[in-house]
Image 1 (cartoon, rainbow over the protein chains, first blue to last red):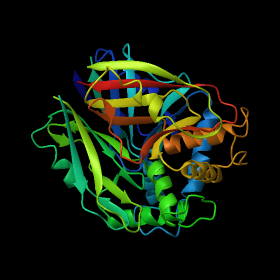
Image 2 (tube, each protein chain N blue to C red):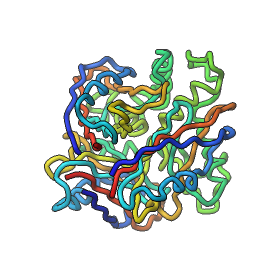
Image 3 (spheres, helix red, strand yellow):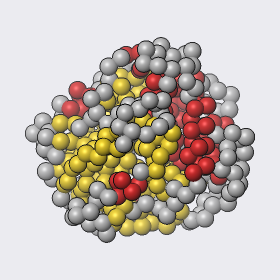
Length: 137
Length: 137
Length: 137
């Protein structure tokens, strides 16, 4: 069985945000066992799995990634859309825009400490869309 | 329905290349809705999704990634295949060799600004193969 | 056909370890053609595909990633679980905790030089679990 749907997330401030509940709520009444493929339909944000308990982890993600790809770095040519734009593109590919997560007994089969992060890299972002494909039985 | 095929891309110069049309052309007459899993069969190149409009973005990808993992870095032990080889392996894992992309109504369901990049990290690369698995109905 | 199973890997020292045989041995008698989705159920380790021949490549992965995200970096706030913990979380997202690999004729369809790495980032790790979903026919 294949089921596809689009989720629109409310706009978030720049940073790392736990969105596991928003994703999980879409599973009800779809597949019991299989996979959920999530593709974020954007190139200046990302999806990743990481620690779901201590908000300090999300703070440290931002500190580290902003140091790794600094806003306004002079090496960038693509600068018309702002000093945060090209860094956002790079972070999107380093962390990835897509996740494929197992579903077992109607629930996302994540590790006990794993949550889904929406990584928002723009200073002034709009709402973000995720296209979900569920494959299973 | 499962369908599998191998795509051979023409050899590309070192850099970041949009290959969405080559991938999309393989979908005709296969599945209508589901997913396309692409696995690049190499360890010194990568596949990633990013901005499909301004070529400057691809230039900036190369500047950034070459600064992140410099050719000939003295920390590397694996140097026999050239100063660009170990950096190519690392970049391949940082950006990833695989993508899973939704298919809707017979087309790749990418965001409007998203394209598939072949990231070629070697100075003198041969042609690259992508193994495609389509799962859907 | 959907088949799901959990693999428990023996605890490994900090470093990069080839685990292709452990994964491949789980395929016998399941699907012939399709995909294998592997989700590592942890946030301080990763799975990646890379060179399977020269152990120096794995050594260089460790040197590079430890320089990229240094233990005990003063920018980190999340430090209670040790100086290697927050770096482990970041490395996990940079390299990724999940892989989706094609299966053809009952075997993982990897490139000839590709192997599956378990990337262990903790100094004193326990055993790690991978949840495997096979989809195919």
